[in-house]
Length: 243
Image (tube, rainbow, N blue to C red; front, side, top):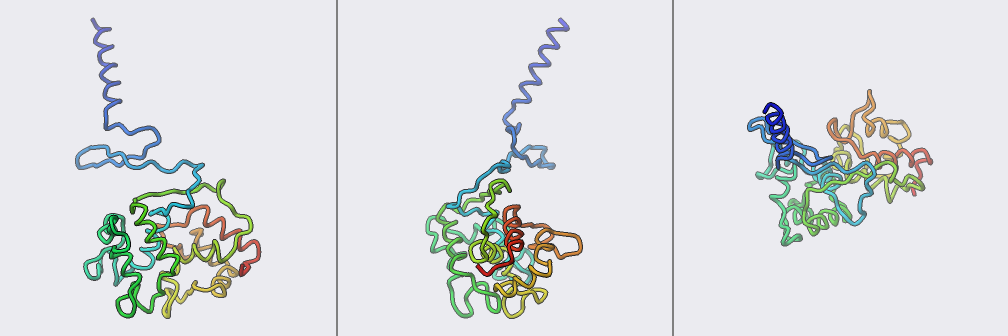
């Protein structure tokens, strides 16, 4: 009888392990400590991921673009929430999005306003046509909370050009603060000449690498992807050409 009881206990344990709340292999989980419920969330991209060039990823493109240009103190951060709008995270950004009518989304329309109504407001730099197109394309693709981190192995670091790789990265992650008539910390990264100065003195790589002794950028809690950092490093190694 004791063996029967032991077998029953093992079967019960197996059943519990296969309960629907048990996360799948390679799946990240968030534990709600208030209710002890395990909530599965999207798995992290595998290390050998090759990201689609036709997909606009929220976590790597839209979120840094919006937060660096729109969610600063005094504007649309969680504390200031100017005009009742917060643009610091996916849930709040989606309040300004109309998936069924992308071009009518407040998030996109405000980028195309002129004068006092344009966002970000002067003296901040205006969104480039390319970045406006990225926001619209993301909404057209369903405004998903998607993410893709390409591995260093899948990152092309040969023949990196300033215009095609380095500047677009800086436009997405940095120039929201570091441009205009009053750039943050007096650092303007909105031109080749300015970027070259900080590339030459080591401050650009020091900051994006979060190296000790340098101001971590884009912020202490956010870092450029391995591929973007590798491409900027390669561009500097190749002579910081205006190509």
